[in-house]
Length: 95
Image 1 (tube, rainbow, N blue to C red):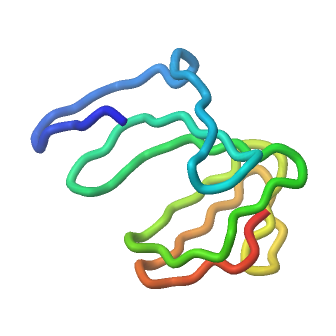
Image 2 (image 1 turned 180 degrees about the horizontal axis):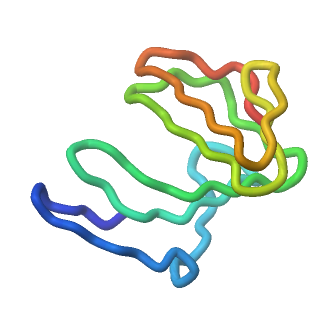
């Protein structure tokens, strides 16, 4: 993932970034955009039936659904929905 130094600005055309298999879950792919001050920004794509394992967030997590749907904490989220998880929160069922 590309490191962005403090005080810098970077604009990224995400269409030019490759999809990479997630190291976290099968059937999940990511586009790594940048990291700065310990924060990462990614675009994440789930194949049908893919699931994240139970995990604890070390940092806050911000999710925005662009298309399709995601089930998180038992709620079905569609395009335009967002979720925010604080550091220390646990995701038990994300698919």
